[in-house]
Each structure stands twice: as structure tokens, then as C-alpha cells.
Length: 491
Ligand SMILES: Cc1cc2nc3c(=O)[nH]c(=O)nc-3n(C[C@H](O)[C@H](O)[C@H](O)COP(=O)(O)OP(=O)(O)OC[C@H]3O[C@@H](n4cnc5c(N)ncnc54)[C@H](O)[C@@H]3O)c2cc1C
Image (cartoon, rainbow, N blue to C red):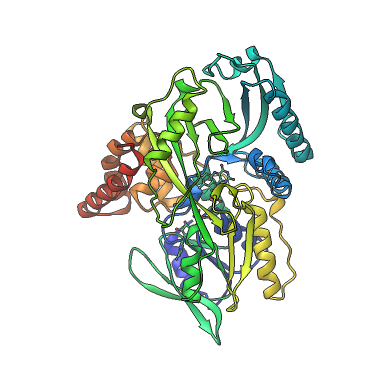
């Protein structure tokens, strides 16, 4: 991926077939589907790829045991199928993860045992392994820090786990390899219209301030919680359809849950599930579901959300994690589509596709896990609009594997090794800022924020040497990074 080359190609292209606004999992999925069907495709992301919700998930590729509890069979079936396909198509970034549901009440083993057998059955031939009933001893062998008092046993089941931001980069590379132009730091600032119909977008290069007019047969709005903002570019009187719901995660050391098995707590006080999942040698605890009324690029966890997670997880572990044990915390906003319920956890996780009077297509909702199916449905609608018959080929499409594996943490690396990685990230992954490198090319910011803060000056210096930037740039990058990073540390 080469941003300068993409800009050159952008100037040379008179009209695209499909132009996508938003470079999260949804937009990137659409770019892959469109490009592999042979459509001339461009994607514009206002910040970095997956800077929004798509780098702040629980990192699960799952059918959603909770949606099964809610009776949303269609969503679970679809997600389980997509889970299986993603494991086949991106085995370098997605793996089979064991989960244990600990049982403390007599009815839990039969209840969750039957539920998870149905979950296995729904996955069919794409299943990741059968669920099993466990004795108390077997449960403690897999999750030795579970509180043994009153524990009667557990249920073991399988789901997928992944690195969300790394998968997003692999998707951007896959789209680019198939001919799409993918731009980060390129906000869409307005819509082009002819006879009331959307026929392209205005975009601005964030770094140079230069504006470009981009003509396109179809424009797709895939902007997650920013969907309403783009719909208002189309119709200033548009009424909001997104109900943003915040979810947070706390990251703690592996000592709180040694081994490679995750824990799923099926019912918290607010009727949700809570996970403790091993991830890059740390444990991710989450999540919450809090209705918010403003959307921002950098949502900040609320104190009540932090307390909620610590309190609930403490009930199940022998050693309760304290605030001082938190290495990092991160918040994301779910782009849920408004419904009748005022409780966000009850709003649908299904995706919704709509087309405005001006013919702009909007894709909202859904899950990371189902991005491929969402993209297929979206491009089907775009193809119908263009009266084109080409069908999707992404079911068997292998996603790109980077030549150099970029590690999740850099604290153990020498300066030479870090510099080599920065060079790789800058030259092949469109890494533009210190925060891109520390948060989404590596995952240092999410794994241990304090280490990320201490590494930021060195990373800025090395990045400046590689890209030919000056001291002012270095200082600016450090300041921006520190301002963002402070939101990842509990006060
Ligand atoms: C706490 C939490 C945990 C989750 N866990 C899981 C999980 O474990 N598994 C799972 O399958 N799903 C999970 N999800 C759901 C999943 O993360 C989201 O459904 C998915 O990431 C949404 O992707 P998106 O591309 O629609 O939105 P986003 O990732 O937010 O992408 C939208 C992009 O549009 C860009 N944009 C906005 N305006 C403009 C503009 N004017 N011009 C250009 N670009 C613009 C934004 O910068 C942003 O990058 C979770 C969600 C949350 C909040």
C-alpha cells in the first residue's frame, strides 16, 4: 500500500464504480468485495484504518452466545458461518479459543450445557470443536484462578479470537492488492450531487489540506457511529438512526488468568455476559453496554463502567484485580440502529442496509464477525443499482499475510528491531503517525499504556528519520500521543 501512488491514481481516475466512506471493518469489507468483483473502487477513511470501533472490540470472532439467549437464531447462525469462513481465510490472525462457563448453581451445568450443544449444532461443519461438561477439577485445571468455593463444574466451548486492528490492515492490503485505492487520513467533507442524486464525494488530504472531487457511480456510507453525520451531508434535516452504546475493556496481567482458556460469565447484574480473555499474553476483561449521546473518535471509559467490570470479575477469581492492576483500558462505540427499546443491550446487532432518496447506500450495525456477509449484501445492492450481474467471490478469498510479522508489544525489542518494524509499517501498511504505530500496527497502547508512553519519543524520532520529518513534527507527535494515551489509563 502506497499512499502517494494512490493519490496519483485518484487524480487520474475520471469516475469510480464504488466509493466507500469509512475504513473500519465494514468499509474495508465492502472495498474487498467490490474490488474482487472487478469494480473500480476507492475507500476514504478520515483517520487511520480501524481507528474507530473496529480496533476496540472484545477481539472475538463469535456467533454470540448472548444472542442465542436472546433467541436471535438468524444472527447466531449467520455469525457462526462467518466465524468458520474467517478462520479459513485469515488463519494468521484468527484462532480457535477455548472458553469455560463456570457453574456455581446446580441448574447451570444442564442449562448452559444444552445451550452450548445447540450452539455447536448451529455451527454445523464449520464448528470449532464440541462443547463438553466439566467436573470441578477439570474446570480448575483449565482456569486455575477461578474461585473454587461453591464451584460445581463448568462447560467448555469454542469460539474464535483475533487481533482486530491487524485484521483491518490485512483487509486494506487485500483490497489494495485487488485494485482498490484505500486512503487513510482522507475525510469525506461533502457529497457531490447531480439532479438530486449523489454522484461522488469531496475529500480532503488531512496532511496537505488539499481537496479532491471524486466522481463515483455508487457512494456507500460505512461510517459506524458517524453514520448520521454523513446522512446529514445528504439531507441536513435527517433524523438520527444510530443509538451509540459504549463498551469498555480493562487489560490486566496474565497472572489473573494463567493458561490459554478464557472465561465467560453468562449473567452479570445487568443481564449481560462478561469475558476474561487471554490476548497477546495479557487478559482482556469486558465489556459494558452504556447508552451515550455524543460520538467521538476517542471515547473515554466512565468510572462506573470500570467499577462494574472490577466488581463482577472479582466475584469469580481468587485474586480480585484492583484499579492499580489495570495496564490499559479502552472504550468503543457500538453503532446500534435505533429501536423501540431504551436499553441498548436489547437493540439488534443485525446489520441494516438502506438507500436514501438521493441513492446513497448506508450500511450500519452488525458485528466484526459478520463483516464479509455485510459487505456482500452491500455490494449486491450497489451492483443492482449499476445493473451489473457480477457476484461475490469473498467466501473463499484468503486475506493478505504481511511478510514481516509485526509483534503486538515492543518493550522487549532493541532499537534496531523497532526501527525495522516502523520502516515496514510506514512503507507497507500506511502507518502515518506515532499513534498508528503504537496503537494499531503494534498493540502496545492497548496492552500496556505506560510502556507505550515511555516508548513514544523514541518511536517519533525513528519515524521522523525514516520519513524525513523535522523536530517540530516529532514534538507534535509526542504531544498528540500523550493526550490520547492518558485516556487509556485509569486516573
Ligand atoms: C465494546 C465493543 C466490543 C465489541 N466486540 C466485538 C467482538 O468481540 N466481536 C465482534 O464480532 N464484534 C464486536 N463488536 C462490534 C464491532 O466492533 C463493530 O460492529 C464494528 O467494528 C463496526 O465497524 P464499522 O466499520 O461499522 O465502524 P467503525 O469501526 O467505527 O468504522 C467507521 C469509520 O468511519 C470513519 N469515518 C467517519 N466519518 C467519516 C468521514 N466523514 N470520512 C471518512 N471516514 C469517516 C471513522 O473514522 C471510522 O474509522 C464490538 C463493539 C464494541 C463497541
